[in-house]
Each structure stands twice: as C-alpha cells, then as structure tokens.
Amino acid sequence: MSINIETLQSVASQYPLPAVKFTYGTAGFRTKADLLEPVMFRMGLLAALRSKATQASIGVMITASHNPVEDNGVKLIDPMGEMLKDSWESYATSLANCRAEDLGSALEAIVKETGLDLNAKSCVCLARDTRPSGLKLAEAVIEGAKCIQKDYQDYGILSTPQLHYIVRCINTNGQYGEPTEEGYYRKLSNAFLKLQIGDQAKLGVKVDGANGVGADKIKQLQKYLGNSVNISVFNDGTSGKLNDKCGADYVKINQCLPEGIRVQPHEKCVSFDGDADRILYFYIGKDNEFKLLDGDKMSTLIASFIKDLLSKANLKLNLGVIQTAYANGRSTEYLQKSVDVPVSCVKTGVKHLHHKALEYDIGVYFEANGHGTVIFSDVAVEKIKSYALLSHIRSKEMSELLDFINLVNETVGDAISDFLVIETILNRKGYNLNDWNSMYSDLPNRQLKVKVKDRTVIKTIKAETETTSPEGLQEEINKLVSAVKAGRSFVRPSGTEDVVRVYAEAETRSLTDELAYAVANKVYDFAGGVGPRPQAK
Ligand code: 16G
Ligand code: MG
Image 1: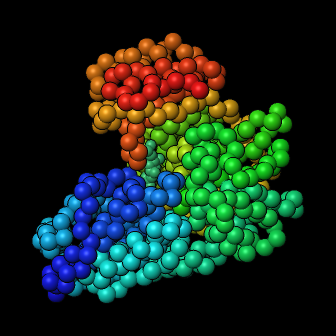
Image 2: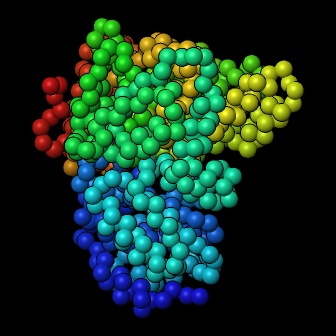
Image 3: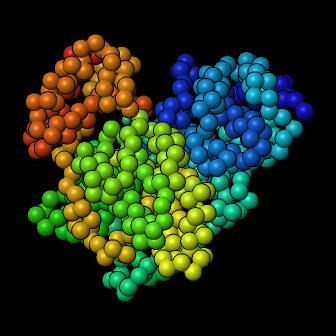
C-alpha cells in the first residue's frame, strides 16, 4: 500500500497554510481557532501515520484548555494514553508548516524514516472540548486521517483526560477499563463507592465548571454516585463564557473566587479548567479569607495517604513526588521533612512530570496549577496485589490501595478523578478542608507576566529555576531574593503565551509582592520590555 498522492493533494488544497509558523509545544498546537483548520488536517494525517507506526489507536484531542474561547488547539495521545513521543513532535511541527503541495513527499519521508508499515491496521480516535470552533476542526482531522486510512472514531465532546483514558483502554484490550465514557464513570464511581467509610454527612460540593466540558461531565458522574454526593455545578456553560473570570487558571493566578458562584464560609468548592484536566479546591475561612488548596496541597495529601498505607502494610515501595519550580517552598519542605518522601523538581509541562514519575514505583506528580495524578508501576501493582491476596496481617490496606488505583486516571491529570481521589482521602482521614489546609501553611506567592520584544532571549537551566541569559539578570534576581526573608523567585518564558512569567514567594504578602514586582522590572530592563512597566496595582 502507498499513500494516494493525487487524492491527498486534492483534499490538501482545501487546507492552505496561513502565514503563521506553528510549533508543537508542551501543550501541542494552540492559537486562534480560525488559523487551525490546516493544522488539524495535517494532524489527522500524522495521527494516522503514528497509529500505523505503533500499530495501536492514537488519540487526537481538540482543545485549548484554559485559553479564551476564541482559541483552540490540538494534542496527540500515544497508545498508553500518554503524550506524543518526543521524536514525533518534530514531525508534528514540520507537517503543520508544510505547504499542501509538499505534503506527499513530507509524509513519504516520515514513512521512510520511521520504517512504519502503511499496511498496518490503524485507528484515529478524536474528541473535542465545548468550543464552538471544535466541530469544524474535528472534520478537518477526519479528512486528514481518511487520506491515509479509513478507520477513525469520533467521540464527540469529551474532557481531555477522558480521551486519554479511552485510548489506553482500547490499546490494552479493555484491561484498563471499558473504552467508553460510561465505562470511565463506572470504573471511577465503583472504586469511589467501595472506598467510602463511616456514615459521613452527605458530601456537598460546589463546582466551578469554567463554562467548559467538565461542567457537563461532572453532572454525568453524579448519576453514578447516587445520593452520597451532592454536586452543584456553577459556570456550566449555559450563560457564561468559557474560562472568562472563572476556572482553575483564573482562580490560581488571581487567588480569588471565580465569578458566577456564591460561597458561604467553609463550603467546599472546586474549580476545573476548560478541558477538565486541572482542579483546585477553595473555601472561605472563618476570617472571611479566600483559601486555596492547589496542586501542591493535593500532592502532599495523596503522598502522605499512600505512604501511610504502605507503612501500615510494611510494604517497601519507592514512592516519590514530582513538582515544578512553581511548587510552594513550604510544600517541598513538608514532603521532605514530614512525609519523608523524595521530591524532584522538573521543567514546567505535564510530560516532564509524567516522565520523571515513571522512575518511581509510585510517582505522585502535580503542578501547582492543579494538574496532576499518580502513576503505579507494574512492579508496584504486582507487589500490592500479592500483599492483598496473601492472608497477610495488613492485607486490608493493600486491598484498599488496589481500589485506590482504580480511582486514579494514571494517563494524565484529571479533574474528575482527582476530585474523587481527594474526597476519598478526606473521607478516610475524617478531614474537612480546613484540617487539610492546616497540614502546612503556604508561603505567600505571586505570579506576574512581563511583555518583552522577544521572550526567547530568556534562557533557563536547573528546571527553570535560574536564567543564563540575558547576561547579568540572574545576579540581579539573586540580590533581590537574598534581601528577603524566605524569598525565592524565578523567571521563564511562557510556552503558551507571548510573555515572560515571574514567580516570587516570601515570608509575608507585602514582601512577596515587592519581590515579584522588583524581579519583573529587572526582566523588563534586561529582556527588552514593551508597554508599561510592571507596577503594583
Ligand atoms: C501547558 C501545560 C501545563 C503547563 C502550562 C504552562 C501540558 C499538557 N500543559 O498548559 O502543564 O503548566 O502549559 O504554561 O503540558 P506556560 O508555559 O504558559 O506557563
Ligand atoms: Mg487543561
């Protein structure tokens, strides 16, 4: 079999390239939706080739996550539900920028280089979030895939983690679960209901759905949870705009309540992002202050829960936590000193965390922004199973851990699965949000953005904690940081927006803000700031 170049060229001519350079970054391609049809067509082609190369189903998720509704994007999902293999990212970039008339030879080059078999059976599985642009973009993906092969499966509207889950289920012949949306709800809800203890008061939670896909999906989940849980969904997309003054990204950056939700002191609330792969908890404390429980709070809770079960069962497994530089300094200290687990810091971007987590028997990874999950290695699962089956004195903990594994979407961070994981731990510990929040206190922190002429002038090392360029910038940051109690700050070019990001934390709110603005001004001076100088509001 070979690619029918004539058909390809005639279909491809309907998808001419705009005058834009596309790069497949940590989050795939992401930009204004009206530029993306040609990219989607090309990703349909690529996904089909990837499917033949791996002889497995490949996912294509159409979403721009927490970006504004006018944007859209695309990510490819590899056979086990993980991010696209690094070496294929460069094929993605070159195809996305390939003129229609050159596509035939570009595809042939990939076939040759990878040695893939064009006769191999293949299938492209696609889904999209709720953006209005999604349908047209999905059609373009299908058109692309069909130029290479006839099989594709369109799952319509799903959350990003649901598609990751389904791809893994398909490629493991159902061993990971049933490859459907219903199968996903069934697997998670069964595990959740099994793990609940005591006659706890009915769990009530308010969900900020970011006016995105997670709002509807959590409503679906409720049906499987019976009346043990009462989920009220706000920002469910019926009137508000996607990610507009709501959702996990807004809540994390602004450290305030989202709009569109009324909250009484101590009510349990969560925010999802636009494609439901991030979650944050928050509540109003008795002092009327906004309290945020972010990814760091989740990883500390989860790691200490797992550590506890393992030590009760006297099972020695290598448990580690992966963070990025955005993790609050207090969380790292708590993990190392109180939970007593190793902590690694890696570059921003899910794939870096995921990759590192694979080095442990059990790897817990979370970005502070609320994206994260737990990965259990085959070795760990086998050991846990054998402990659960043996009439071992602690087999109970190990059966619970097995149920716990079924509660986790190991493929990627998942707002819905993480919600059930956290609720299970809180239930079993008898914790409310305030108890959880009191495990340790965050240092005040601030994130700022600086607009510069060219953000790529900022080069970083050591998991983005230090800059090597522009020359002299790091020395200035060091001076500012050393003058502040418990100070820490770093800067990095954003991978998703044309800005340089600044992070600062310190002992007090005012010291933190001073440090953040002082560092932002150094970036402005050293890296060619444009527009008004960063200034405290
Ligand atoms: C993307 C990443 C996320 C990261 C964020 C950083 C994936 C799937 N998503 O959304 O992990 O935190 O980018 O954005 O990798 P930034 O580079 O603009 O700070
Ligand atoms: Mg997201």
